[in-house]
Structures are given as structure tokens and as C-alpha cells.
Image (cartoon, rainbow over all chains, first blue to last red; front, side):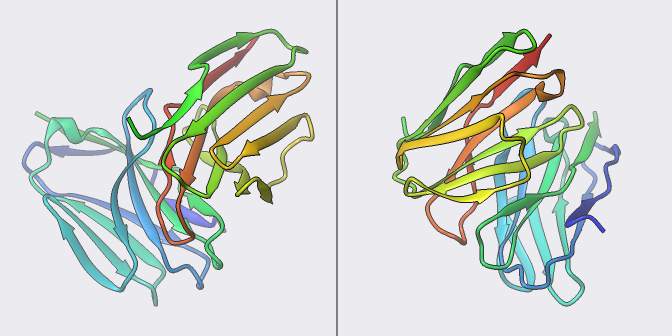
Length: 111
Length: 112
């Protein structure tokens, strides 16, 4: 089992729709979770951090965490073509020394 | 500007050569990392230093040797380069164990 698993996609949604990105992780002791966006040829940039169970909203982005199910998700509302990128789920391992990344989900938003 | 900066941005070299990548952060962070991103975009941790001390050394060939002269700098030296070393190498830093990573712009290494 991979430490952090994501559906590689590609996920294609029309402009204005909700994009839903999912991630599961194997380390039950993990306490910190992040979503990064990476445009082609660029470095990953942080878009959301989440540490507690439930939802966390920031603008058009909502992160959801369920530690019992070892599941993290990211919702993007009113998707825009500029949201087209690879989204990386990242999990801090128990002890907090290592940030482990999923393989990323490619999102395409069609105008 | 506060940032994590890496040099060079691009590095093209032949098999068997030795090369170095440099990283500097002016964010005042204690912990720095090297990650490798392969052609499938998978980001894999290689090394981590906390205040000049090596704390993570993943199963990386010993041709790769990190060096941290001070807590603001983390360099990566690669000996006897192989074709499979071609990738993008990212430097990153963070202030504490719960915080997200701040990435540099990456170094695209191509070994021919």
C-alpha cells in the first residue's frame, strides 16, 4: 500500500463546476495535511493546510479531513481554466519529520 | 524578497560527470529538504537537515551527498551521474514540524 494515494486522473470538469479531489493515507499517526497545486514546469505551491477533522474553507477551496477513515479531500468551487494543474496531497508522518506526497491528480477545467 | 532559491535552474551534463546544486533560504527556517520529482511528477524525499544536522537520509545512492554549511544553506553534490538521475530536484524549507513546506523553483537536471 502506498503511503499517500491519489487518483492520478486526469479529472476533467467544465468551467463553473465543482472539482473534487481525493486522497487516502496509511499512517494513522499523521496530524498535518496539505494540498499543493503545481503548474507544469513550476514548483508546488501551498493552497490549503488542515489539521483537524471536518471542513476548512478558503475562498473557492474547501479541504475536508476524516482521520478515522484516513481520508483527505479538496473541493474547488466555480472551477476556472486557470485551476488546471496537478494537485498534490501531502501528509506529515508521525513525528512530523517527513512530508510524504501522493502522485498527484491532474485537473483540466474546460472553458 | 523572502524565498527559497536554487541554482542552477537548468543543468545538462554527461553521464559520469560530477555536479552540484545549491540552495539558500532567507526565511529563517530551521529545516531544509531535498526532493526529487521524476518524469511521472512523483515527489520523493531524499534528505533533510535541521540546523545543519542530517535528520533524514532516505534510500538514496551514496553518489548523492548533501552538505549544509549553515542552517540557511543546503547543497547537493552528485557524483558519477547516471541517466536515471535525470529529474527535477526541489529544495524546500519549513520553520517547524507542523508547518507546510516552502519550495524553491527547482533544478531540472538532464543527464545525456
